Amino acid sequence: MLLSAAFLAALDLHAADPGPEDVTDFPSLEAHAQALARAAHVPVEQDLDSFFAKLNYDGHRRIRFREDKALFGGAGDTFRVEFFHPGWMFKKPVRFHQITDEKAEPVGFDSGLFDYGGLEVPTNAGHPSGYAGFRVLAPDSFLDRRFEFLVFMGASYYRAVTTELGYGISARGIAVNTVGGAPEEFPDFTRFWLARPKPGDDTFRLLALLDGPSLAGAYEFSAKPGRTTEMRVRGTLFLRQKVEMLGIAPFSSMFWYGENSHPKPYDFRPEVHDSDGLQIEIENGPAIWRPLDVGRETRMSFFQAEKLKGFGLAGRDRDFANFQDLEARYHQRPSVWVEPVAGFDKGAVVLVELPTGEETWDNIVAMWKPESVPQTPDEALRFDYKLLWHGGHEPGGLCKVAATRRGFVMDSDDHLYVLDFEPGMAERGKAAEWTPEARVRVNAGAAEVLDARVMRNAESGGWRAFFKLDVPADTALLELICELHDGPLVISERWQYQWRR
Image (cartoon, rainbow, N blue to C red; front, side):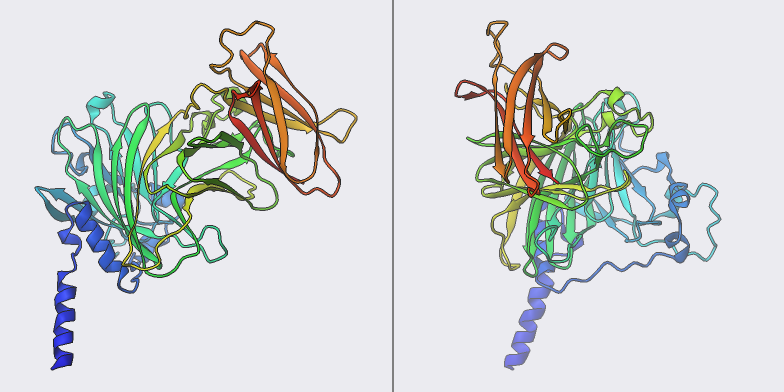
């Protein structure tokens, strides 16, 4: 009788767990995610027919969604959703629901939504059980034309554009064991619930379920397109098992080489990168600019913070002449800025720079690593942040780092650094002959700073700082810092650079 009672109680508890059809808002999604986290992970079954699974890039891109079949396309001048067909690299089916009148209605796969572009699909080919991902289009009246501004596709990755800047950086839901020694995991957004938009809405809202071997999580996204595309991201994670490291608000970018890279590849373009620096602001602390660079080894940098104001990867160089790429248009890639709302109390911004010999793959990762995380599904890890896709975050009235160049001093093995700063607020009202002071220090490693000075850059209206380094032969790693000062007052961002032999 005791065993029967326990068994019945377990059945009742299981029956009370919310399923996908019960999700209509963020709290119900949280309950669903926690119920999943309390059970063993069940991988998404890849049931894709071999014809679609074997498609190459060119074959897969021939399958196009029919524009007149968009979800919510019949609701008037509203946001619309178009789906991607599984195939090539994207084999896992993703399930969808639409939320209407506080009900979740399934959105099943329909081959009639696609133009197969002349592909000879076998008559006996099985159709997928879900889609590979989706994109969101703004109402046509927004720009008086078709404007795709948001894409979710592949694991937990998503990207956004602005009205002026194209695709570049990729964000993702969570980073698991990216650093720390354990095998890295890539959880998937396995289900989405799309809130039915109304004419006049300026924000598109959706819910997403994250699921992976070590955790399950609930996410809510609210996205508003514009010159700055604004997103609000709210998440709750429940851990199935202990992890070495979690990265909140992670995103990836590409840096092959830039103005500070030596040696440069044999390529006609002066620079090739989506982003050229990591930007960090800490409350009652410095505003940091860390130029990106890559070498033969993986680089990992940790920036400790107790009260983080924000961080992001940025592309500050907007001059086409410095890229000379008419197709990739690297000078028009967006910067991304993370503005914490909750869940960023104590931890570190982590930067990972991976070696690369090409521009095809993202090799730069930035994220927030909380100091401590829950280790059981009974504890929730909650966070909330704004994600701004735009031309760049301005560091208040500080002089902003505009360029980093380096080389050897002529007829010497001393290293020369040349840093350009845009003008800030502190110089206003100063005499024409006034110049700030460059204060340079070696924060880690052994080297001697020589001849630090500043001069007016008449071409930009800002400042150019120079300094030389005498680096001993046995020094392999340096952390360098440079700031512009007006007496005791810091008037610039903190330029912080990692040098490796």
